[in-house]
Length: 346
Image 1 (cartoon, helix red, strand yellow):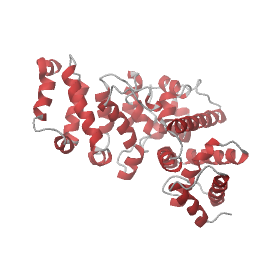
Image 2 (spheres, one colour):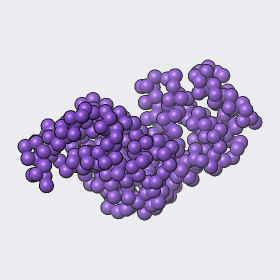
Image 3 (cartoon, one colour):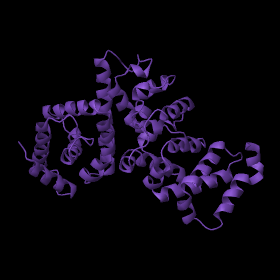
Image 4 (tube, helix red, strand yellow):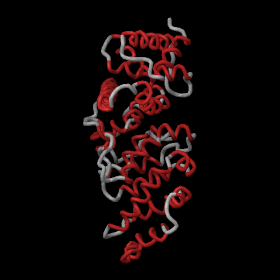
């Protein structure tokens, strides 16, 4: 049985880039795995788990690249952990960023993209099997509330699954007629934010309605983990729409002007202090300036753009004014009133 001291030594080496791909790293993974397994924990990722357990679980995500009986056992236990605790599920999804940036940092970006695509595929297979165990399949489901709660939360906790999966995204799109009552009161599954800016108007309107069912008053550290990365991607897209570069999970977002109002709605469900302290100011300012410019270039002013500008001025005014010229308020006014467009909108 591995000791906590041995495990901490392995984790520290991995965090500082000392753990390579030599045969010794297999031994290191074995030490960490047997330590975590022997704890017989019901929680690996949420606050009920110790910091050592959480870091061990994140470190072991690299096991997805292997295929053995031990790996299948680990995957089976992992599936039970994340389906048994929605907090573990949300933390697990968020921890992929740390896994990528800390424990897998020596690998190239394309290799990491392929690795996490494979992880998404594994998660989809786990969900499909979970549905099968209940006598269900994605093609047969006529009401999302039929799905067991742990599996349902999983579908929406990973944006790649609910928005981009060839099997699960159509199932979601087909069942947008009812509220998901089983998840009411939990923290917002990150996928609903991505769905709220979906290119299918029916899906995004349904997703925006679902956002009101969830708990949004989370601590800042959780906001940083779960939601900041998503808002950074979406605001980054607004700030540089011509780049065309978006992670695959965001491949189905709307590219039209309606994204301004849709994104404003998704952000506005959270307390302002979380947005102000949880999203980098430079990302906010870049998105705001590009949207103001956009407002000045389009023939007809869109209500969503006006909503976006007004909301951002109410929440991020200090950041905006600190990073723009003294004449910028006049530029905003001219861009939204040019050629009588504001009057026509009203």
